Length: 441
Image (tube, rainbow, N blue to C red):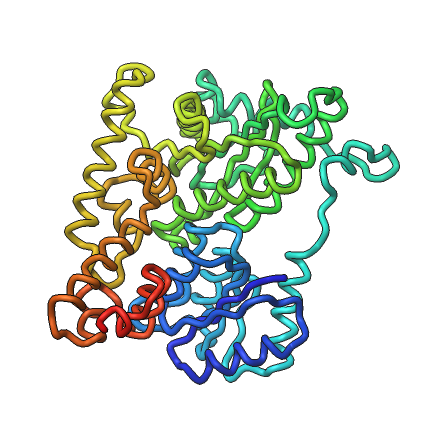
């Protein structure tokens, strides 16, 4: 059964949609509701949510930003956007972030349930598991592998020595038919661990698993831009993702966050459906075909860090201060850098935990790293989930104010960073096991 979160700053709409879903007969477990983006994010962090249904126009955080933040926390959460505005730009941004539908208010009940049902059906669609894949016969499907010649040319473009050869692309040389348009590019590399699972994988098994992985990657990256997928000489999966000038202007500075979310989705889906561990490395975004070799080296460097972090899976080149090291850093240097990032994060949270609208994205930006990497480091070094640490500080301060002042519930909620007293009470009871009024007594 699937859990759904309905978000709208109009309580009657939340209540109506929740009631409609609960009585629909669809395969739905729990229906949660939230009146703001920040309240919704707490629910996404604390509960198992499969589908997010959100209004697009809400207070401080609109539905697009909520969708973005939710996918940082859980990249696999699906989204349906509802809006009173037939705005092409909103719809385009929503679809680019992976929204499954964009519905206009006033909602037609039948259309709404059809949309939800369609999304749930696709989420429940059975994907062949690894055992079925490996026992498939040649007649079951035909593998359309990347063309060897195209593989070779694309790999040459990512290699160090190919940096000055890309002029051929403009003159229609060997590279002219590759489909490279750009002018903005990023490189993503995926390394499958085919040593896990069954030790008896044959060469055919490995080919099938690489092929299945490549198709999963293609489906996920098609949402990010125009992606060219191919195998490296050592059988990694490579993707060159490209954007036009217009697409780059529309997506803005969130492209890197979207790429990282796509990388996490790749890892999640390959692990879930193929039972394989996978390491993903992501370059920065640069303009111009001649920089493809630079992007290839960046992805290679990001992949190197997996040796230091075997329990981490998605590595973004920009998370690491490469300019500080002449060569791969020692374990001691790496530990010093990680501790410095975490200590800076801890100080920032302790000074700003009561700020309304505080997000992990904002904390990560202050430390010049991605939200996913910061969350990983914080948990690894402190033993605390980063957002749980924010909630801990808020709740301890709330208890102090309850027991030592005459402030009312809404005043305490305001002081510790919550917009809604009701939402504050829910978090408080979940944390302490009693409501604020019961603790006061």
